[in-house]
Length: 175
Image 1 (cartoon, rainbow, N blue to C red):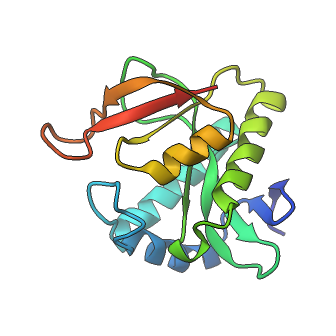
Image 2: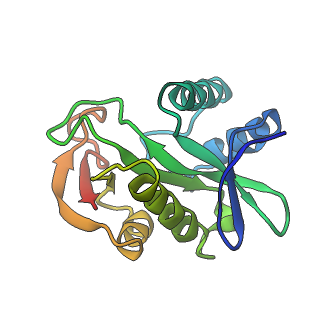
């Protein structure tokens, strides 16, 4: 039985299943989904990422949840809480993040799932501050941050992105 962590009116946020691997590989290979990442992810990179998600859950008891639509039982991406793997002026911290398949954009799913995770982090895990960040060019994700009540605290250069890259500068939000 797959463990469900959170439910919203339209979504189930649950542990990852083997059946999620192939749709997540395809999601990460989609150039539009990866528009604000340095590159699309290979199958091996995606499987390694899922393994990191699982290890994070095992260590902290929370992480990036697999997101499933209730109406179709379809895996559509992830949303959740994690610890960034890079160093910056605001780390260590807990971040909230999301990534959904393109077919599920512009339907409020990212906002619905992210709000549930944010509330879970504050109310159930007693996390005082939660951060989120994205490329300064990613208006869709920044819009989600605003809709879930996060406050913009500034800009930073992402240390994992090479100097001069168009995606180097990021916006930073927190609760």
